[in-house]
Structures are given as C-alpha cells and as structure tokens.
Image 1 (cartoon, rainbow, N blue to C red):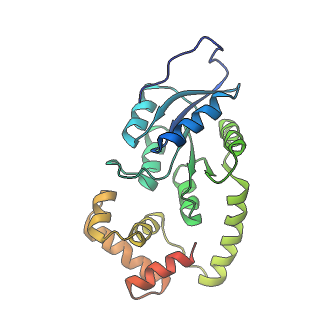
Image 2 (tube, helix red, strand yellow):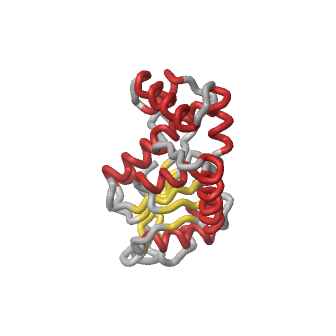
Length: 224
C-alpha cells in the first residue's frame, strides 16, 4: 500500500505521524478510522504485509509504527526477527505491537529487542491512542491488563521454574515448535540453519527439564 494522500483539512505539522501495519484488512481499516478521528495523530501510510510495511517506512517519515506481531502466510519474517530488523533500520521510529498474540514471555522479549510498546487487541481503542501518545513522548507503554498479567506471571514463573530463563531466540523456536512446525520449517522461517534451531531447541529442553517434544510443548504452555 502507498502512503496516504495529503489532505487540506488540517496541517500535519505538530501531529504524531503514524504508519499502521496489519494483515487483516478490516482491522487495518478500523485502526485507521479510529486514529484519523484524533486531532493530534496523522496516519501517513498503511500496510498489509511486512514488505509493504518496510516500504512505507522507507518512503514516509513517521514517529510511530503500529504493527501486528504475526503476519499470516507472509513471505517475510515476522515476530522477533521483524522487530529486531525494525529496531536496526528504523531506530527513530517507536514500535507499538498491536496484537492478539499476547504470550507474556514474547511480550517481554519483544520489548527487550526493540518494541517500545504493546497493546492487546482485546484492549479498548482508547488504550491504543494512549500508547501512541506515550511512546511519542519517548516513554514505553504496555496496556494495563497485560502489564498486570506480566507482574503476576513473573511471580508464578519463578515459583514454578525457579531461575529458568529462555533466551529470546530459544523462546521463539519453542513457540514455533508448539504450533506444529518442525525444525526444518522453523529454520526456513527464521533464516537460521537446521543445526542452530536444533541446538536452541535442545538448550530450551534442558533449561525446562523436559525430555520429549510433548513435554516441551506442555512446559511452554505452562509458562503462559
């Protein structure tokens, strides 16, 4: 999708420039409509794929990117690799993840590798605009419900697993494995070698104290 056309209704100067990326057309339309109603927010481009998102960012100066965590059936890597790439090439843009994918460990890892905010799609639309304004001020933001869950999860996880801590890449491998993908498929998706993926999976299994694939998936689900 191309950058949106300029309007003559109000000047862009002083407004928060936003790019919105989501692979669900109705969700993209809904987010855009909400933000266009805000006097201090300017939607400068929209995108339906990861490639379109990076193209929009290259063409269109903005302060905030609102993006889903997962882009179904997209040829480009999404998830943590997408966030790392965004942080590397567009460090000036505040990344807000707006997603139904709210695994708490992945929210935590996403914030650690470059995201400035996270808002669950279960939250109110007012929460999204609050996140935009907060991140535009240079602060970080997690919606209240997810933030509360993160605090409780941290206590529960420590009580159940002690000091177990998977790395971001290990967690990504286990997450993808728990969806039914095999090691070769995960390697292709993440652009890593089969050997690397196998090693990260094995390390995760050792950290979690599990000995089979079934136990690994069950342990991952208990972490969330």
